[in-house]
Length: 246
Image (tube, rainbow, N blue to C red; front, side):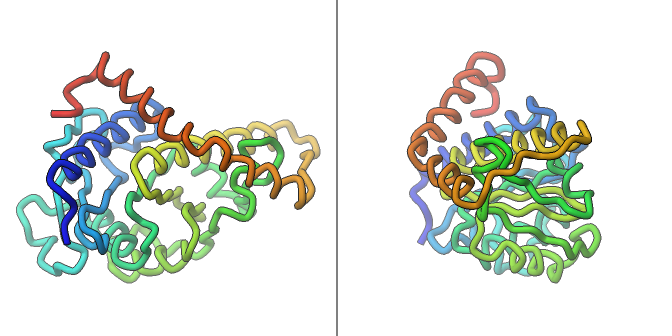
């Protein structure tokens, strides 16, 4: 069963917004990387950004809708990027929590992903948000052109909502675009804190497990702030780049 047309329209607007916001944050990489949002109850139909269009120029109407079970998708004249199809079709087909999926190579998280030990350790309240809540994929298989690599990435994520992808980047999942945006924002902030702390060469003050868990759980109190964060950022776009919603 498909989501109501008015809901899909809002999904388009929100997904276009988060693409624009990612560009504002400097998270884009040329015309690569992809965001998607499920439009069907089972998640198999989803919106994804068009092939090789810069994040900063994507509008709601530019997003294409595809079916993860349709093998002819890559034969369409508006076919998505091959890696977008390989990764996001697997995420939406295999992971029920993947209503929204943001895959990026942002600077700090990607720098951590290139380390032998890519862990985000609980050294402040933002890094602690990810304590025991982040998957780590250490089996990079090259650029994800093939279905097998997408399926492997989905399996590596498992029941988590975010993954540090060794030698690659990051992916976050959310039940809404607002949830996914806020998670991606704080994951990259956590990675930045780790990179900066590691760059000092001094010992890290890592929280013990009990404190880290308590701090991570404390984020639930601020769940509504995720919605407010995204709403505020869309207000900025409404003032400065209103064409995203077209």
